[in-house]
Length: 578
Image (cartoon, rainbow, N blue to C red; front, side, top):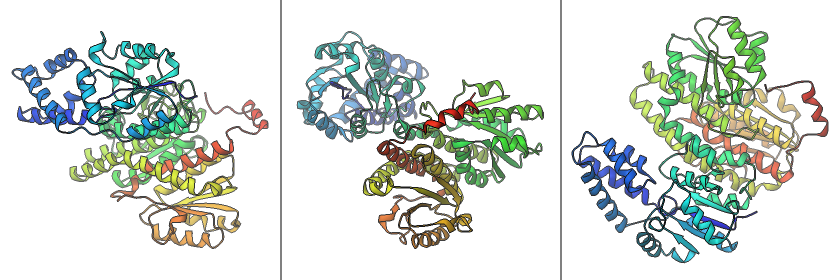
């Protein structure tokens, strides 16, 4: 059910004012010899009232003379910049038009004073879209107090659950939460943290995504879906890159305690696949062998380790019984039992000597999407930090990878769009898949493993992944025109061989597709990667959503979420979660 009322914040949400303010803070800071005034201090002030901003300034600029004079100059310069130009945020007009088309009431609740708010909205020809506007000088208490949102819903005589708030700031999200109004966060300068993830119904990349949320009826009390977390992933990836040292520090310190020759990553399911996606990157930047092994293979047979082997057990949920058994065995062998998890408050911490959070945030849907991508990234960030500290990578190359990692969130969003367009074009074929193979080399083999798992567990069809060359040495003999095959180009060694394999498969079945930029594959059978890659080993971070979205879209259309009735007996015999 659509909301009866949508309430918009202004600065940073509808209007790109925060970027102009940050520019003003940074420029004035540099004039006073304060290089981080715009990069750090300003971010603390976003969404705060005047008194709170002054308190922050006093604290951050306590070593400087006349901090309030600096603030006064910043405010004057920021106002000047905003008088010169204000841009509206992407998707704003489209969203407003959509809301009008659905006869949904539209309101503004902003901390900005009335005269400024009306002047800016009028200047940008937005004023007529809104049915009601409530400003900061018309309420007693500022966000994060819920007063402003409470007054708006009182004006429209709607219940909190019948409305929806759109916010970009921490204080705005908290205000909506305290007013008990469902809130969607569209982050501007400040990336969401665990608190915002708990206080919002969704976190999306732009106002255009809000239209998708409304169309998908992902509002009010409806449970999140795979798509919710696919859309959240870019923000977690971005946050993690900017906090690389903080989130990897514990694992990096453990690794640097010894001169290891190899790394063992013990994991199952999507965690196994995520480790496989990251494995080539780890091997390249750590100059060591990396072994990805399932927990029970480790427990039953392959546990002949030396002191030169660094062993990590990975469980996203922290509840996998086989991972717990692996940690128990490590302790029995008097080896260090290190666990890596996306849920630190889980049974895993009872069995590990050290259990580390890989900074995934929250994912409540069992069909893992955000978790595997963030795990792959975390392992790569860990490798990068160790590589720099051990002198295996110089500062220049390290920074180049960091810059490409910063571009990953936008690439993830681009590949979401590419996949949705591809799906619409091939909807009939996608919803008619019977048996599927996914093949690739190196990091693309990891993507193939996860793609096969995701489609098998959601669409409920036979779906298998193979290293590409292994596929053509026997498994290909069963091919018929009814089969679907996905070829994932790793854009490195083996790329040309993969294209040859694609062409061979195409001679048997028309249902063969590639994720590639090769001109040898026509557009009708390709999902293109429309950007330059400096380090193709980072590909899993933006190619994984391709199969996540296809799995979700097909499962949603065919309604294949439920298992066979007989499957209810399965858990009477085997428990996989503690």
